[in-house]
Amino acid sequence: NDDDNSVKKFVQLTFDEEAHDVDLGPNHVYDTTTLILSYSSLVTPLSSLLVDMNHPVTTSKEGEGKNKFVMKQKVVPNYNPDLYTCERTTVQSRDGQTLIPVSLVYKKDIMGNNTKHHPTHVTGYGSYGMSEEASFDYTRLPLLNRGMIYVIAHVRGGGEMGRQWYEEPNGAKYKCKINTFNDFVDVARWLISSRNITTSELLSCEGRSAGGLLIGASVNQDPSLWKVAILGVPFVDVLCTMVDSTIPLTVGEWEEWGNPNEEYFFEYMKGYSPMNNVREGGAYPSMLLTGGLHDPRVQYWEPAKFAAELRHKQDQSTSGPICLKIDMTAGHFSASDRYKYLKELAFDYAFLLGQLGVVDSK
Image (cartoon, rainbow, N blue to C red; front, side):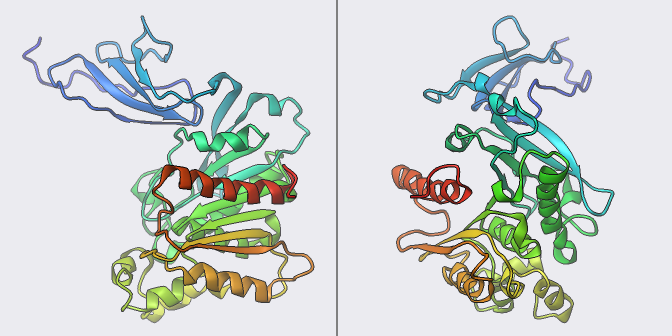
């Protein structure tokens, strides 16, 4: 009955790929039996799907004659999705109760020999309740095409598993923030010991901004776990920044981290702030820290101070190089120019691949 506006039934849509991102598309016609979705996965570029709401449950992306019709898909030159595959799995955290979602993408042909270890790159964020979506990104292809496994650790502090994944007491906000870093390290250890697809000599990690805090704290927790770490505009001097209310963004950030002017938060934040927890004589991985002179969110002196602290305290004979790169024209989000962005990304990848030994560092 076209005049009946009541909900007839609830149906959960399912998709072929394990790791994907789906959202409502631009639905401007409300009196309709079809629904437009925006769909993407670690393998499939951004697509607009048309779903028949009268028959929504048949799973397919193959096109005409199916209930999920691909209206349009972003064109990625010279990309063949049939060469790649993605997974979504879970890893048990050290608390013995929490299951951490993990997404992986890699070329199909590298898994032919299960005993072979592969260079593996782990990324994460885990703050502000923001989810790290398992969506397509063409900039990963230079890594995947060189035989790397790309991993997204959906650690606590994000929003992947609902609000409780972010809030206290079992999420990763305020005085349970340490869960973010523990989850990330637990995923890395699982990749080595349980999944057995890599080793510490082939394992790298990367994060930006609050994700840089994640990398800094995780590397401090277990420096020998990693071969390479990339920290983009990293929030690593947490205690000094959050204690100074004259910095324009500090007071608002107390809602995320707590106010270290109160002893209740001070001691806890001191326990994970990367700047305050560099290990004396530690064997640290090769690290690239980047910043922007005009960054209003994470000032350039945070990566600069952290680089100096690492160089001062690490064991020089067993640690990798600590490299600092400050862009004198950029802000928090690096270059707005597309070609400069690709150039900066190429620099990061050159460091990563060279230090991992995937390509000749010379």
